[in-house]
Every structure is written in C-alpha cells, then in structure tokens.
Amino acid sequence: MQKTVQKEMDTLGIVGKRLEILVAARMRMKNRITNAIVVQDKLREKSEGWSGVKEIRKWREKRCL
Image (cartoon, rainbow, N blue to C red; front, side, top):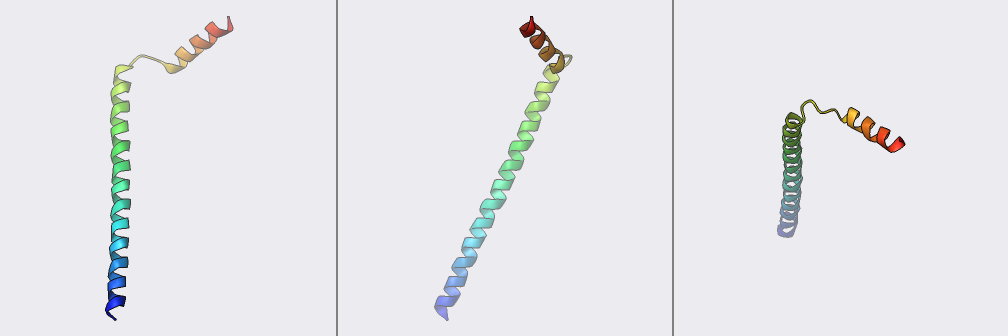
C-alpha cells in the first residue's frame, strides 16, 4: 500500500514538473514573439517612405542591363 501511494506521488510529481516546463516554454515563446513584434514596429518606423518593391525592381533592372 505504502509503495503504491509513493509511486502515485512520484508520478504526480513528474507530471507536475512536465506541465511547469510546458507552460514556461509557452510563455517564453509568447515573450519572444512579443519582442519580435516590438522590434519590427521600431524598424518599420525608421523605414517610412521606403518601398521594398521599388528597391527590388531597381535591383532586377540593374541586373538585366
């Protein structure tokens, strides 16, 4: 009886630790995504008036000449 209870407690402990790891990983991923969005917004502010499409067309035209 005592060993069975101990095994169940060990199993619950392992499951609990795994859940903590999964939750922490999800939170880290969410934080990384949020930070990436902030960086993209800052870069977008700095590149106002710049058009990537125009730039690529210019490069292609130079290459084809």
